[in-house]
Amino acid sequence: MIFAWIFAIGGIVALAFVIYRLFHGDRPQQDNSAGPTSARTILDERFARGEIDENEYRQRRETLNGR
Image: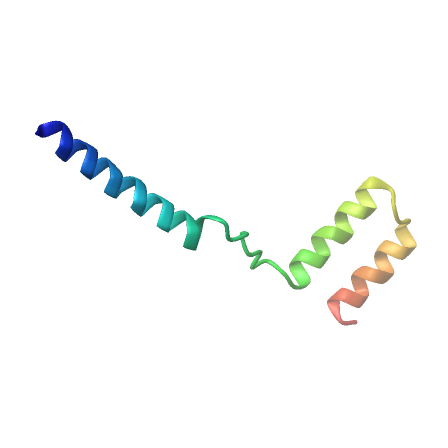
């Protein structure tokens, strides 16, 4: 008799887990850091990797700063 209760409780827990995963588990994480800070970070990384030269880096940085 006790095994039936343990099995029933385990089934309820498993069902709750499946329902939770269906509604909450597969959502991609949203990146709330979009904006000037994010663009500046990307610009800094591109300059550090050598993808852009110093002149282009400075020009784009000024554009991001709104000057």
